[in-house]
Length: 309
Image (cartoon, rainbow, N blue to C red; front, side, top):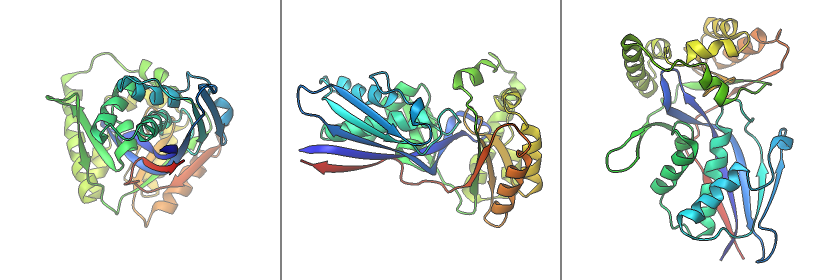
C-alpha cells in the first residue's frame, strides 16, 4: 500500500504574447508536495510549508493543494483520507509563474497516486482545467513542454504539444511584488475589434512556427499582442525601459509572463547572459528587488515518487 507520495511540479509561463489563456510552457523552477497518509482517526489534514514565502501559505482545508487533493476523491465518490501535506516552495507566489497551477496539479497527482492511479493523465488534465478555469498554466505543469489548449468536441479540452526549438532560451525577471490575476484581468476590455482579433490570430500562428523552427525574425514579430499586454503594462513599473534594454541586448522579444508581474524574454544561448545582465541593470533603480534567471523548458511535467508502507 502506498503511504507517501512526493510530487514535483514545474513553474510555467503562460500567454507568450499572443497566446492569451491558451498557450503555456513549463520551466525549470518547481514546487514540491509531499503527501503522507495519517492513521485513521487523526486530524484530517495537516499542512506545513517551507521556503521564502512559506508564511503566505494557508494551512487549513482552504489550501489549494488540499482542495485539488480532495477533488480527486470527490470525483471517485470517496472520502479523502487523513493526510499530511508538506510543501516546499521554489516558485514565487502571485508572480505570473503558475504557482497556483503547481498547487492544483500537485494535489491532483498526489491524490491519484494514493488512490491507486485510477485516473488517466487526460482525466487529471480535465480536472485541473476545471479547477483553474483556463488551461494555459495547468496543462504544461502537468505534462511538461510547451502546450496549446483549445475547447474540444467529444471532450471539454484538447491539448497539442508545441515543439520548442533547443536554440530558444527563456529568461524570467521576477520582481519582488505581487500582482493578482484578478486585478490583471480587471484592466482588460470586455470586447475587442475585428482588427485586433485578426492581429492576434496571425501572430499566434507565427509564434508557433517560430518556436518550432527557432526562426528569430519570426519570433521578433510574433511576440506582439493586442489582447492583454497593452492594458497590463501600466501595472508593471519600468516595463517599457526594461523591454527596450532586453531588446537592445539581443532578446527576440519580451512579454508579460501570465498575468505578471514576472517578465519573460526569449533569446539564444550566445546572448542569454547579456540579456540577463541588461534586465537586472534596467530594473536596478526601482524600489523593489528583482531576480533574473536563465532557464530551460521542463519537458517532464509533474513527477510523482511513491513510498510503500
